[in-house]
Amino acid sequence: MSIDRAALARGLGQSLWYDNISRGLLKSGAIAKLVADGVITGITTNPTIFQKAIESAGDYDREIRSLAAEGCSALQIYDRLTIADVQAAADVLKPVWERTQGKDGYVSLEVLPRFAADANATVAEGKRLWKECARQNVMIKVPGTAAGVEAFRLLTESCVHVNVTLLFSLEQYEAIAQAWIAALRQRMKKGFAVHTLASVASFFVSRVDAAVDATLEQLAKSAAAPVASELLALRGKAAVANCKAAYARFRELFGRDFDDCRAKGARAQRMLWASTSPKNPAYDDLIYVENLFGPDTVNTMPPATLDAFLNHGAARSSTLFEKQGEAIDTLKALAHYDVDLGVVCRKLQDDGVAAFAKSFDGLIAAIEGKRAG
Image 1: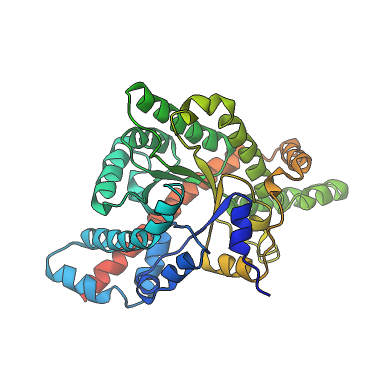
Image 2: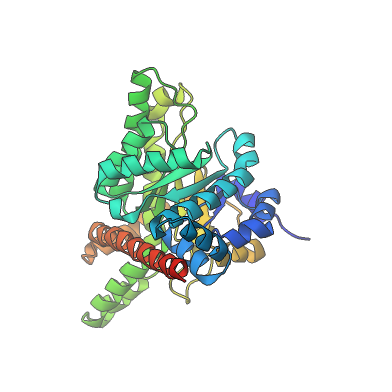
């Protein structure tokens, strides 16, 4: 007897989104089937995903040549291709958006990585993409940089749905959550509606373990045997502990102090677990899925992770509430050994922005090559 694991996750308050998109998946009906079968209720994209989609298949080549013949630049072609894909995905997801009254059914489209340090440019680009997509179930993706926090607040005040990405630390998350609340209250002060707005805070998971593990292994090389063993025993624990600390703060921020917004119909900004495919092949393939179930959360999974969950995943309880003491002990132990998670996470955010910028540059180069050809 097959198990509807997606339904079990929903029963725990978690939505499953798909961290993947391509013209081929849209045209073949593969994404539509995942939606129709109730497996996924949303889609996330980023420059790396679009780079892979456009470079690795010929699904876009004819349109690229056509747009090139119209005189479009590589950047203009990128814009047309990605907006078309997002619109198509939004149309597939619209029944979910309607059924859930705007809680789910979203597809995300990221602003250009080059705007990560420019709040005004991010706002302008976010508004442009929102208008061009012309779908209420689109989220504009904004990085959670210092400039991104301000851009997110302004976009929310302008009634644009936003997915804030590249959040790694409790500090980064709290800044975004507070910006969401401030934007809602500003709209309420002006007499504007807040019940139609939706947002997610994308908190990255696996990259934290990858970075912390490397630091622990380096420290262990010069430590005495007992200490080295303690350091190595902490590997693979930082990311889940970090998520549990952030989720605990989420529960505080959107508790009683949020009642004034809730009374006007406002939603809490849900936490979205991103980068949930383990970087270390020695770790369980669902370490960042099965340990992160809880109410008001989303897990966006790449294809391999989603397949693994549907095949052999377990969703028996709200694991975010479990082993809280162990999570606290892990974070205390890291601090004891001078592993500064704040420093690690700031670097991860900087590296993430740079990685998406590199993917975007590679994508534009690939389009330019196809365009010239």
